[in-house]
Length: 188
Image (cartoon, rainbow, N blue to C red; front, side):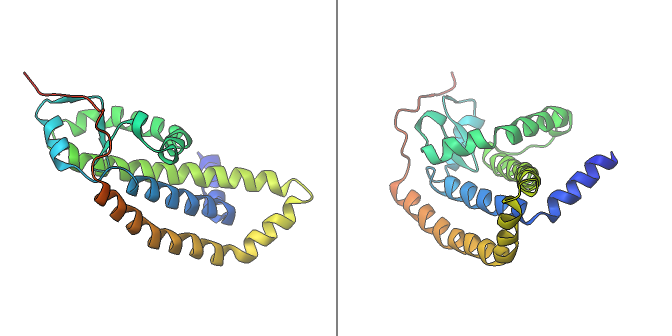
């Protein structure tokens, strides 16, 4: 247990790990903003027993086949986090059965939980890369440069994200639902 706590502390102290987290956050938010716009009606359709080849993620219809490469790569990169999230979901199923949430609301909670777990994943990945770099003679200079420009780099990443996410989301709203080939079946 002590080893896990020590590893977690090291991850949280790593500047490179936090840069990984900032890049992932930008990637995650831009990928979600680029999806079809939120669809409470589609979530209600699924709540009423409707069947579809798509699901709901962050309130938006998600069909892996029809999504952008940007989102597909994010899904693949966050697969370890998704597996951990599914294990938490299975373990908490007896508790969640009694909570009545719509799929629309639950999709936002699940997306937030996935983002939280993925943040831990990217902290660990960043710290692992930092450990590897520190073992190389040339890696120390890279880490010093990252340390020197960390605040500026993180700020630029977050500012670019804060500006571009609303613009991409506005474009997504304007384009509307972009997956006409998704199949839907109404309940019998």
